[in-house]
Image 1 (cartoon, helix red, strand yellow):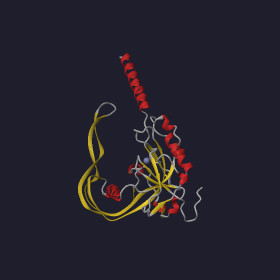
Image 2 (spheres, rainbow, N blue to C red; image 1 turned 30 degrees about the vertical axis):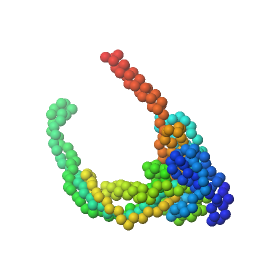
Image 3 (cartoon, protein in one colour; image 1 turned 45 degrees about the horizontal axis):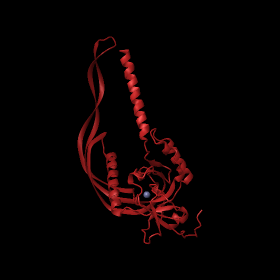
Image 4 (cartoon, rainbow, N blue to C red; image 1 turned 60 degrees about the horizontal axis):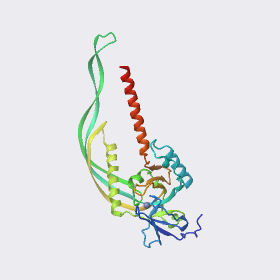
Length: 313
Ligand SMILES: [Zn+2]
């Protein structure tokens, strides 16, 4: 393991990926020749730059490399029928543990909303049908109908625990796929946390992250308002949200990253594992050949059925 003096971090170096733009901080024994996020070999090594922004909080790793690799293996074996064979055989031993920079955002959200609220009621209606003997008979049945009334109002709520990526190597959608993180495990940041791990410097601007946080918060408010609406159902929900008393903190999140690059001109395959919960997220590379074969077989089956019908008629 790492030989770090208590409360002192081992000597570090910085690598910068020319492909995805992430800047990673690591100890010399963790030195890597490919980017852990995008598997690009164009990484540049240099001494760490001073005055890097210090994170406020950190969530520690719970899942070790072995379990992360196993999760990835299981996930890969359960993936699509059409996945590339070389992807299915890929070695998850390449998984690297990275402290991913993210912003933790909170605010007060005030919204003006309007909607049409539906109230269900039942009615008994009569209808005619034929009985088993073929006679026309009149029967009754209960039907549910909905009456709508318009509603408008003001809604206030706290928005907490919105997490958005500050990493150049991991998109917000990719991070969302392995969320949530249990933020009760949030600890005050200390450099000792990084010992033995790769850590990424925040490479998205705080402004970008504010925008991402706003979008995510408004989505969250939308879901809250949907739940908040009275009645049996509602439609035409519209709202305008104002965010105030905003708080944004830089946090480091534990993530195992597994990246493969098949060709220079193709985007890399990235699978992430939540280092706290083991949740896996990513997109499976699809084999064009397998899809083509399936389509051809599908057409052949359809053709066969058509031929069968044609011969019978
Ligand atoms: Zn990269």
